[in-house]
Image (cartoon, rainbow, N blue to C red; front, top):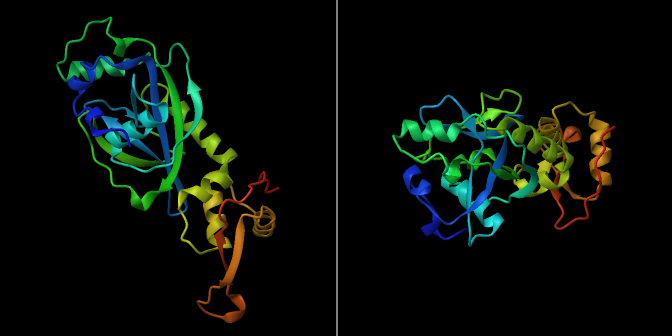
Length: 254
């Protein structure tokens, strides 16, 4: 985690900062799994009916990955999250909806129109899949609400953050085996049915049980353990766990 002295606790303090990298920002698309549903973590700005993914700016003496971790912590108090770069957003008109200007006006902060916060920004997108139950979020001076949304029921969003969320979901689906293994969304020992429910939520479609089991076993990322006895012995499913540092193959459940 970046040193705490870098954390900006107010919008005015952030605006007055002189040592940010110009025209570059970071944004974090954070997915969670709850009740067989895939969700994304969003923030609501003060006095604006718009939501956004957690993000922020980069200090001149700060590594890009450290900036992503720091801004995620500032916005949500989430720490030790394994973030991966997945896309760079650079459309000319991506910040045209003037969220920054509206925020400053609502806080009665006067800023010259040539200030860096009004200029074009290219954003580096980061993605993570985390345990929904371990999220302890806190609003900060920039935001009033931090909330989970179903990925197929997104609210009105600031900037191009709807596109960010959609591209983050596409990245998650393309790298599902690697992401699921590193997410800690399942207990140390789990059934094939529990694993299938997680995959179905991420992929957004039902999977054939036999095809799923055959494919997962062929990936050589699972170790089969003892049976899980909860009732009839002949119906007890096997338990599995992920192997440490397996060589992950491409997934295809067709």
